[in-house]
Structures are given as C-alpha cells and as structure tokens.
Amino acid sequence: MFIIGGELYNLEFNLWLAVTCTLKVLNGFSMLPKCLNCQESISLAWFVVARMSTKYRCTECGALHEFTQRHKLIGIIAVIPLLFLVNLLEPFVTISILRFVIVLAIAVTVMVFIPKQHTLSDHDNFKEEIKNND
Picture 1 (cartoon, rainbow, N blue to C red):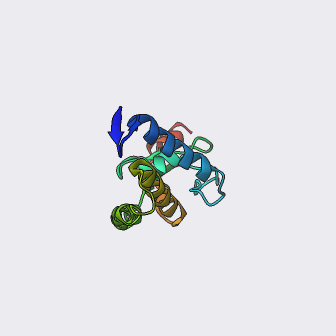
Picture 2: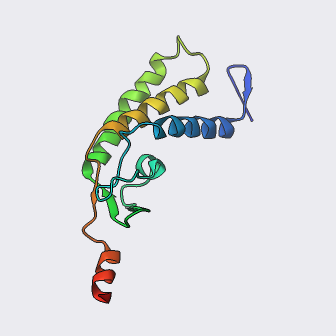
C-alpha cells in the first residue's frame, strides 16, 4: 500500500485494473491487429507489452508473426510525448494513478491503430517441419 496525495492506494491493483480495463475496451474494436494469414485477432497482450524479439504464433492457422522496426519506432515516438502529457494533466487530474491510467490508455490506443507493425516471419520452423513430413 502507498500513500499518494494524502490518499491510500494499492498500487499493484490499480495498475492491474488500468491495464485490464484498457485491454477490454480495445478488444471491442475491429481495427485491432489481425493475423496476416487468416485474419484472426492477434493477442493484444503480445502486441502491446512483448519485447521486439518475441514472436507470436496464430492460434487459428499457426502462422508465425514478428514485429517490424516500425513497432519499435512507434513505441519510442508514442511514449516520449506522453511523459510530458502526465505533467500537463496535473492541474486537471490531481490523482497521479488516474493520470497514469489516462496516459496508458492513450499510448495503447496509438500503438494499436497504426498499421504494418508486424509481419509474417521468414524463420518459421513449424512450416518447414510440415513440408519435410509430407
């Protein structure tokens, strides 16, 4: 438990709640990242919080996806201005956790709606094994 601005907060719970609510809201949008092979939705958790080297295998068709350099660039460009937005919101939103939630929601939204951040991987061992077995 932490005391922030004279009020008692459970920081971990609030962060979990902020991320969960943001992801639930964004899951309702049809513009979320989709598999380039079968158009099935890609895990938003992978898309938002995974490292650049992490790859994602589609649960429907098995296609292997990897991030492009555009994803890294957008992550850097989208986050830096949001750090200033936290300070700009201070006169309007006095609770720091709420400011963080607002900025987190904006950052995730920006990252999700910009296209061509992932591509099908050329290094898909699963496809090579299937070809060898046939």
